[in-house]
Image 1 (tube, helix red, strand yellow):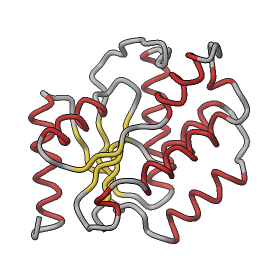
Image 2 (cartoon, one colour):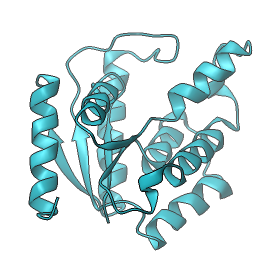
Image 3 (cartoon, helix red, strand yellow):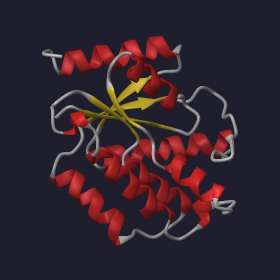
Image 4 (cartoon, rainbow, N blue to C red):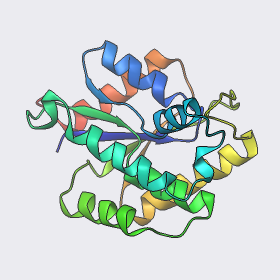
Length: 185
């Protein structure tokens, strides 16, 4: 299994780290929620995360992105900016009930062992830059970070800490950890 998840709180630098890994030649899968929010906001929906079907829409986009791309079947290392486990944490954070669609997706990734059990947990930078899609306070971001930890651990994932640092140092840490787990890489 060569699919690794990058997770953490909003604004922790996951996307910047993912872009650096892509620049270094790695296959990457972009985060889904931000794109779902942007598409809905462009259509005039101010706060799409308030819509009942938001979490399931995010999970659907995640699944489609995970299945796409040339290396999905070729065995290359692939980094995913978030996963359905993150979407489960989002569901809990938003106070939404579990849906059959998300539950089925979580069951599927568990049964199929879609992702490595080692997850790169990208720690927050100590601030949150607000955007149209990211309207979370630092206090809420820290609570959301703790919730991600709890949900991943409850599902049996091992978190690999990626502390706040320059993006190149973070990418070096991720690559070194992957080489240790997959010496043939």
